[in-house]
Amino acid sequence: MSLQNTSIQENKKQYKAVSLISGGLDSMLSTKIILEQGIHVEGINFFTGFCVEGHTHAIRKKDQSKRKRNNALWVAEQLGVKLHIIDVIEEYKDVLLNPKYGYGANMNPCLDCKIFMVKKAKEWAFENGFDFIITGEVVGQRPMSQRKNTMPVIQKQSGVDDLLLRPLCAKNLPETKPEREGWVDRNKLFDFHGRNRTPQFELAKAYGFTNYATPAGGCCFLTDKQYSDKLVDLWKGRNGNRDYDFDDIMLLKIGRHIRPKPEFKLIIGREEGENKFLNGYKRQFPSITVESHGGPLTLIDGQFPEVDEIFVARIIARFSQGKDAEQVTLRFNYPNGVVHEQSVKPFSVEEVKQEWYV
Image (tube, rainbow, N blue to C red; front, top):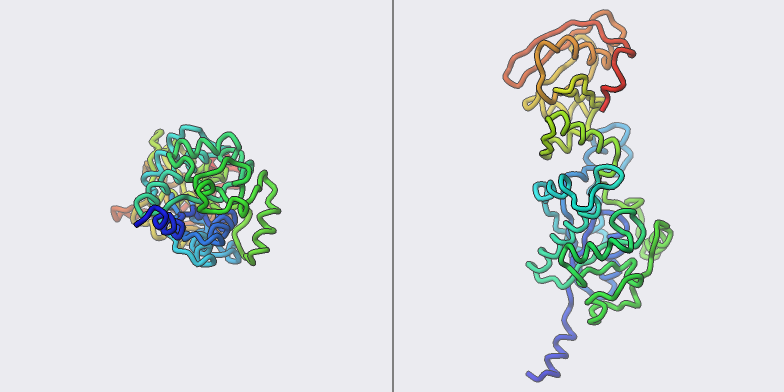
């Protein structure tokens, strides 16, 4: 075959891109932009365990009106692309516990997180015969991972170099290989920048996208102060051992967390949905039920001495329907089958100290 014919065959190649799909609007738009150029695109979503928003919406009554869906799957369905969901819970621990570039306002290691995900996407792309990687990043949109001076860090530290294309802000950045080689038309990419999301909303309208996640998707609970505080407290309660598992991640989003003593904390259901969810953990943790009145199910996490039963019973009774009664009966259920009952006078509202709340 002649070089000329080889060149013709090469020009007919359909290039393949893998898009990091978080479930937010930006990754949705970026994927659509590249699909419009005739590129074969498949999505990838890395499950760290810290995006369980749809799950918590399904549990709590106050969240019943919120969408109960996996936004990444929904985006892939709207775009008609295959989505690969990859469990990285164990690998992600090092990113969270030892971030080279530190944390954001809370326990969010955003820059290290992006480097990790792009690196994993690069590995997957090479293993599966894909040519380049797409993300929904926008210069200046996020204070930690999307600054002009940190975006090149992601390319260098992930090892992806110029195979990383950011369609929404490509015109504000140096040309990547897909642009230079003509795999995509740079003129059909965008120059979005800053935190103003009006351009994204207008582009979404032009594409006919509605009901998408706002403002930016991703749903990472590590950016949430309350959740981050509970995570730090979890580690303190384990004498600085910062290991965690998926059950820990889930339980931090459920219930009222109170640590009346350093050795243990109480996870108190706030409503029926949470009580039902916590019920699934009764074989793993000591639990407390209110027998004489309506009341929450409570799990005890940590080293709990039985001598503290009356003290803890008075706390739990305060959150029951018998909070103003003279006596409330509670049952302590231990995973080894031991059961104790305690009848106590509930603490007053002043006695349940605010500093106990995690």
